[in-house]
Amino acid sequence: MTLHEIFDDVRAGKRLTGDRGLYLLKHAELLDLGDLANEIRFKNNPKPWVTFVVDTNPNYTNICTVDCIFCAFYRHPGEEGEYTYSVDHMIQKFKESAAQGVTTVLLQGGVNPSLPFEYYTELVRRTVAEVPEVYPHFFSTSEIIGMAEVAGMNVREVLKRLWDAGLRSIPGGGAEILSDRVKKKISSKKGTSADWLGVMREAHLLGYKSTATMMYGHLETDEDIIEHLEQVRSLQDETRGFTAFIPWSFKPGNTPLEKIIPHYATPTRYLQMISFSRIYLDNFQHIQASWFSEGKKTGQIALHFGADDFGGTLLEENVHAAANFVNKTNTEECKQLIREAGFTPAQRTTLYEILSAEEQEAAA
Image (cartoon, rainbow, N blue to C red; front, side):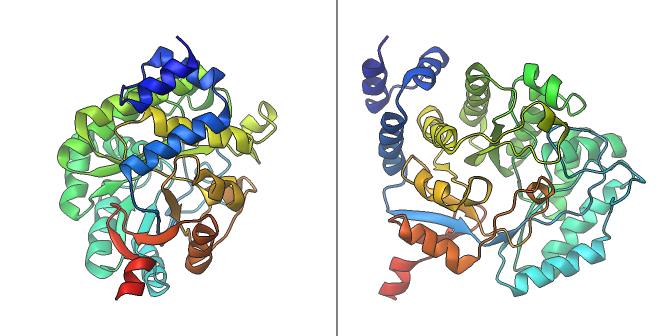
C-alpha cells in the first residue's frame, strides 16, 4: 500500500477502508489531501458556490447535569449564573431574530431534568405557529435522551411527538468523538457512541434531517478519528439522513479539560480534518467550513480544502463564548469573506435549498 495507490483508487471512485484511511491520515501531505478533497468537492457540488445560512444559536437553559469536562457553558441547578427561560421569552427572542433576517434558529441547552417534556413540544409548536419566518433546528441528542428520561418515554416516541409539534431537523451536537474510549474520559455521564447514533437513526427513520459533527483536538488519536468517521459514514449509508458534516476544534478556555489540554488545535490540523472528512465521507454532499470556530482566514482557506459551505452568521452564540472564544460576523461580511476566497455566495436554508445566489440575482 502506497499513498500513490490510495490517491489513484480514491480518484477512481473506490471507497477508503479504515486501514487505508488511517494510513492516509498519518502519512499524506496536507496539500495533497487538500487537492484531492477539492476535486471531490467539485464532483459533488460543481458550481463555484459556497453556501451559508442566516442563523442564530440562542440557548433556553444552561442548567445541565451531564458534567462534560470540555464544556464551559453549563451550570448546576442553583449555581450562580444558572438560567432557564420561559417559552414566552424564547418566542420573543425568535421574533427579534426574524426581524433581523434570520431564517434558522439552532436551539440547544443543557440537559435540565426540571423541565417537563411539554416545555419542548410547546416551544416547537409555538415557534412554527408564531414565528413562521424561522426554521426550528432544535435539540441535540443529549437533550432528546434527557427528555425521554423525564417523560418516561423511549427516544422514538419523544422524536415522534416533537415531529407532530412541527420539528423537522436536529443539530449534530453531542457527538464529540464517537469513540467510547474517549467518551469515558471527557463525557462519562453523556452516554455512549451508540446512544448518539441511536437517536440519529431513529430521527432519520421518522423523516428528520440532521447534521453530523466532530469535536477534535483533545484526547483523541488518529484511530479515534477513523472510528468516528466510519460510524457516521455507515449510518449515512443506512439512512441518508445527514445533510452535512461539520468538524471543529476543542476550545479549552474555562473548562476542566483545559488543565490537561492547555492549547488550541492548529489551523493545519483543521485543514487536515476538513480535507480528510471530504475524502472519507464519500456519501456526504456537504462539508462545512467554520469561520466561527477556527477564525475567518482559516475558514476561507478551508474552502479550498474540500468544504463547500460556510456555516451560519450566528447572530447569537454562547457556548464558545463561555470558553473565551468569540468571533462575530454578519450577512454582508459573510458574503464578502466567500467572495474574497474566490467563490460565489449562495444563501441557503437549513436543508441546503438555495434561497439566493449572486449569479441568480445578477441575471434577474
